[in-house]
Image (cartoon, rainbow, N blue to C red; front, side, top):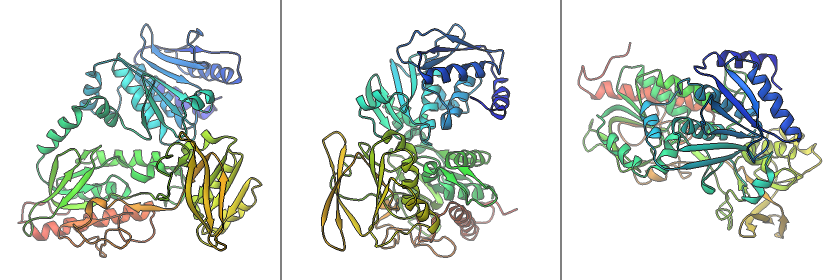
Length: 527
């Protein structure tokens, strides 16, 4: 089950256990149960502080609990936590075994103080790069608070439950049997939903903060690079973000990041966040910006208002709010979002095993999605608005070699149909003949590009007709002291490495602005 390299890594991690733990399994005669028994045996062999026990005392099979000896720590896995979830397994082993979590003490204190009874279930897929964050957050919450139980469930193993609950997108979280949330969530976000007073307390703390010299809005590659470059100048730097990593968190494989032959989005984001934390950057997560108030006088304070009701002030601001998936904007799309309409083929593709799906978009993202899905689903139909596909030739050749893929060009999607609970068809128009068609299917994956996150800035600074922030060669916007970087701007070629460079440039420009505007001695000089 585990290769020699993985066993060696696991053995090293398990030396950090501070108390003995038990892996308590409930199995049956299925192949997955036999695989689970093999996995747990191999895990237990890597440390004398880990014991594997088969009790068959839980209704969900195959599953296993992770407990400190003599305790019920509330952490259970249904199915095998391999793929992206292997890290979740390792962290659960360490945290149940007493190794301290890498979470702020303030957040962990809030988790320990949570009152009530909470039984969480998270449905994941092994190819979902968004799922581990949710699984790991809820596992940690269960370890910290005895009132919390959490079971992480592989939807591919328990497909009957997936069908019964109408789950068509992961991660899907249930609390005490009722839907709680869908999509990536951090521990802070989960606590904010459970503790209604948490947001007000966080806003009050933000209001107390002193003014920044550089305030970065957005935590993607551009925002992370900007905050690092600003902090290295020795100036007071803050970064406020809804979720650290932005779109990169939804990126599966990255093979064009120079000097790194291959990595994955979540791994790169973790490295970025750690590097930001290595500097004196004030990170303010789970905060959405709603308004930008320009300085009243030259060199005065710029204000950023937040959805929580708080506001932050800074001498300069760097906008790096990135972009999000573009939607089709047709009837039925919103009604059936996460009910058959999906935007992440890596996350949700396994839920459509053996079914018929469509991919909207003939660029690289759309064609790559169709290729990936073709190995899982019964049939893929790809729709492209233009008269030809726009993806790289090598991808098109691979796509057309697949027997279960159909391609329609000059196709305009007009409506998503469903039965009230899930998608069952898609209507489209042939743009050449004008004919209307209806295709029966179970899933639609939308891959038609990105939209800049600038709605909150309209009327405040200059935006392009596409809604991107207009900047000059130094990252300056139309407002003095306000800079921008990354996918949210007019810079062409939306790439991670370009966003990082643009973020670094914006920070250097902000510093240059400060030393020219602020009296001597108030801003640290460059080394």
